[in-house]
Structure formats: structure tokens, C-alpha cells
Image 1 (cartoon, one colour):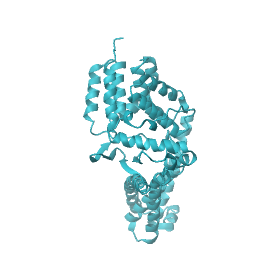
Image 2: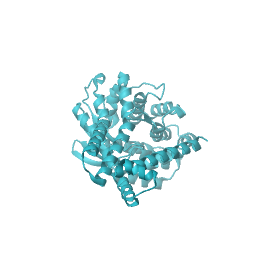
Image 3: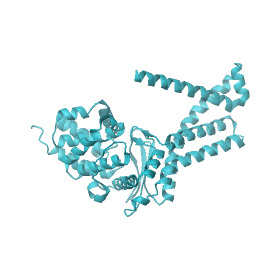
Image 4: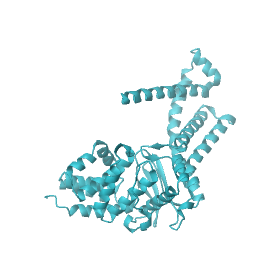
Length: 383
């Protein structure tokens, strides 16, 4: 029933959106007279066909442009606030800066169109993190493009193609600004507006936000978690998965234990997080699933527990992301070698991992992955 209602609701919204877009197109061509013609069934089908073709073409182009400039907005306002550039990702491609210069890498996070990672000096006071303009920068750029589009439409003679471009630029700008500016969370990921709200409310959120950015930056430079300052990872149990930054800190702490060879402790932390069940945001559950399975196979090796964790959703998630994430690749390697007992296929996965070593966004994760593979190889599968 719930799925049926969701489908009906989606179709209704789609129909309303399509109708509104059709009238918007007609208005862009002939103004109010065009709307009147529609009512009286006096349509210029050639104009409509050309306009629809232009609309879909420009919708595609302007969506990519707005997504790209949204991330550039984070970068520019971050730099103006004192942040340093680490990486910027548009869809699956990222520009990364390390000690040797700039490189193009591949990475993807389900449900995101991009990401801008920046960092602050290690000695930065967490209570004084300049979070607002960095988080708001993307939405500000989208709104500026929306304003520019409105001015162009009102005061410039653009022709049908030009008008359609700026109308779609305005539409995509308004949509992306709304989806990122109004405080929301999607499957465990907070948008920019919700990040700002959470960071304004709590000092601990600002501290964890700073540490998350610093950890990501160091990983992109090839440093492992175990080699980073210990105070970046705080051992604070989570009472509720609704505290996004506290939950993120807990996951980072578990990853530190994992990278330090404290596998039993790491497994218990993953079990603590996993115990929230349906309360745990979907993406968070998928993200820790690979690590949870890996720690289970390296410690108690309860195959019934592994089968429970490794459901269809997690299987699809790991198989779609292991080429971008070394840790997901190790989890798949461990499942193949220690759970399914298929050493030949496991060797193939190891070869694939090594073939992508120069493409990973986080080289530090690759070094951890190699360490964990060595630990998998020491497990006696005949027990």
C-alpha cells in the first residue's frame, strides 16, 4: 500500500510538473497570447517542437553547469573564509591536490552530484571554524545565476534559443538552491542548509566537522588514519543516530581502530552503530556495512552474521562502489576469500584493486586496504 501511494504521488507530481513546464514553454514563446491560443486550441506545432527540443537540451546542459558551479561556489567561499583546497569532485571525476600537485581521480558517493573537500590548519580552534560561507557558497552561486537569468530574460532580446537557455538556467538554479538551501537530509546525507543549522546549534558539531574535513584532506594526500593526530578521533558512544556529526565521528573512530589493527574493538563499534536498525540512515548503514563485514570475518567469523549484514542492498552498493573505494574492494575480497572460499576469484579482485591504485581519490585508504588484505591472507579458512 505504501509503495502504491508513493507511486501515485510521484505520478501526480510528475504530471503537475509536466503541465507547468508545458505552459512555461508556451509562455516563453508567445507570452500571454500563447496561453490564450492553447485555450482556444490554436497551436503553432513547429514552434512547440523546436522549443521542447531546446528545452530538454538546455535542461541537461544547465543542470550540469549549475551542479559544477555549485561546487565551485563552495570552493570560492571556502578560500575566502580561510580554507585550503584539497579536492573538488563533479559527478565521478575529481581534481585532487597533494604534495606532488594536481591530479584527476575517480570517486562516487550514491546520491551526490559532487563534493568540495577543503581543510583548515591543524591548530584551528574548533569553536571558531568559519563554516557558514563555505557551506552556503554553493547555494549563493546558484542564486546569483538565477538572478542573472531573470535579468537577462527581462532586459535582453535573446531569441527563442537564448530565452530557453536562460529559463532553464533559472529553473535549475532555483531547484538546486532549494534542494541544498532548505535544511534537509537525504538517506543519511545532510544538505548544505542542514549542515549550517547543525553547526550553528552545537560546538561539538563544529569540532567534528573540522576533524572530518582534516581527515578527508590527509587521506587524499596519502596518509593513513593511524598516522593522524589521535585527538581527531574521539571515543564517544552514540545515543541516537540523529546526531549526524557525532555519528560521523563514531564511524571515523571505528575506522581508526580498524586501521590500527584493533579489529575486535572496531567490530564492537560497528555493532553498536548497526544496532540502531531502521533508525540508522540508509546511506550510513550501507557505508559501514563493508567495514562491519570485514571486521566480522577477521575476528569471530560468524557466517550467519555476515549473511544477515550482506543483504541485497549492501551487495548492490558494494558492487557499484568498490572500484572507487579501496575499503569496499577489501570487503569484497574478504567475502570472496574468507566467506565464499574462492581464492582464484579473490586474486582477480586483488589484481583489480592494484590496477586502480593511481585512480583512488583517497590514497591513504589504499594503503589501509593493502594492510587489511594482508590480514585477510593470514586467516586460516580451514578452521
